[in-house]
Length: 337
Image (cartoon, rainbow, N blue to C red; front, top):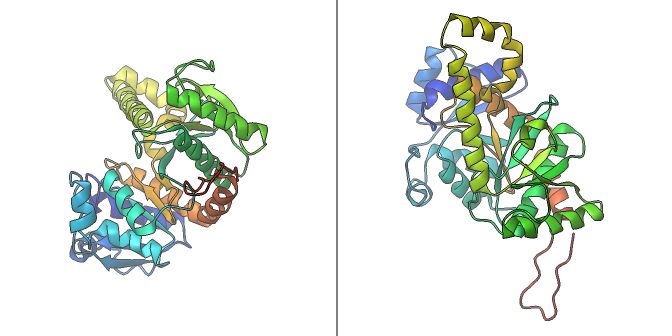
């Protein structure tokens, strides 16, 4: 029900996904009358791999988190997340209010042991033809070094589970030199270097913004403020380039000749960000996504469930995440897992 367009986008995206994945089953959560009416438009009201779960409320895109969390207890967003908690669904996908989705997910699913804050992780294309995973993209504006350390571990686990190889990790900074950056970034680097020396993580070092698309590293780590600003700037640039290439006949002809290469820059094909660190899989679609982009968000969520990402995250985070010492214990020290 969420996003800028609601069922008019999410349902066509869901139906397109089902055509590509004959083994998948979807539960559409929302105002049942509206959902079934949209399904009927697409002649899919009797699809055996679709079921509808009624929810009497909808979280609006501008709803404060307090309203979404405390007052709308039968919202489509909350009901969908509860289906994951109860084991009736393997993963939840939503295009709704990001803050509300994170808050409700944390409240219903809880965070994994030793994870202080969940992070939003998405992928971007790079010049090497592979994906660059980047986190956090907006869940945590203010971070401490141990938060960025945890993001690096979670990003590495997700990449390894999805891409089937050990990733290199870069810490986003204003320069590659160790002396550069703010105090949080400079304090994070030694934590990651220590993991690298122990063979736990493959830490490349500091990377700059241009390294994201170069493919210098597989996983780029930053706080949510920097990550979200970067992501929105990338999306805006992509739309600007698309507009420029359709301004006149000559530019359209040039775009037609380069269409295969330009597809790599289509942000719609990279829609779908995982909320990492929760006791359940939740994926966030861009609120302004069209049906094609929402279909991609479902694909990413489906792949995460197929590859048992949740089980791998649980196991590897338990193994890798630094333990927080009991402040009441005399002489307690931090133990590295």
